[in-house]
Image 1 (cartoon, helix red, strand yellow):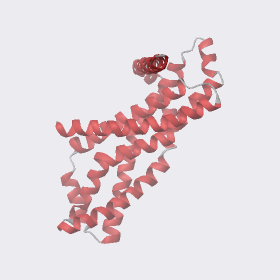
Image 2 (cartoon, rainbow, N blue to C red; image 1 turned 90 degrees about the vertical axis):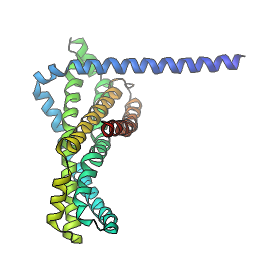
Image 3 (tube, rainbow, N blue to C red; image 1 turned 180 degrees about the vertical axis):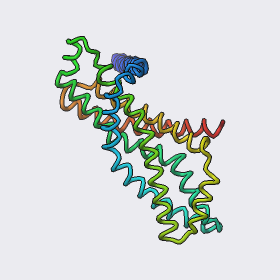
Image 4 (cartoon, rainbow, N blue to C red; image 1 turned 45 degrees about the vertical axis):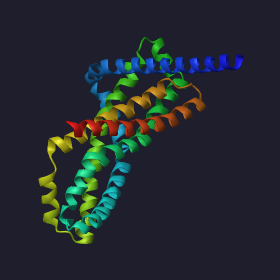
Length: 262
């Protein structure tokens, strides 16, 4: 009997702790969304975060996009060649990158590079009592520290996804046209005629914005509520990568299902 009571007690504590975490996350999200106009009024802080999150992630995004384009060019050519449609290689590469791989792979790389940096930065500020010092001086740390980073990540992520897709298309062209010998005119004309700006590119932009919001919010949440110790910051950084990656993949399925059902 006592074992069953202990089990129910542990389950109840876990559920209560989970609900409390969901409540804290919801409150923080509401505050960040409400502070977006305030952050826009001080755009210098936001531009600094766009540079920090976007420019520092640009190298890994560009190199990864180039090699993804190489692989798509090779795999797409040998697949389309079976059906005599190798001229549609440009369309295949563009749709794969713009619709799916561009936003998703960029979000995963963004979580590993920028998300961990955000969590570590906020966590170190908390462990160093800088956030507490701001509160003592009547400065809201959510408005001064978190809101510009939140908006910066939301803006930087679609730009990085666009760079990833553009570089990937160039990589697919280099492999398909330069290396294999697909007709260059057919490569670009098929792409131009088959890619719809609003349906394909627009859906990719929406995905990248949702992923940017999710990854940035998870990173800020983990850093803001982490234990103010070196071990706590390290665990929060690990949780940022895991939770962000899982959230991106789950949201990708939901968004894809919604977009294709409309």
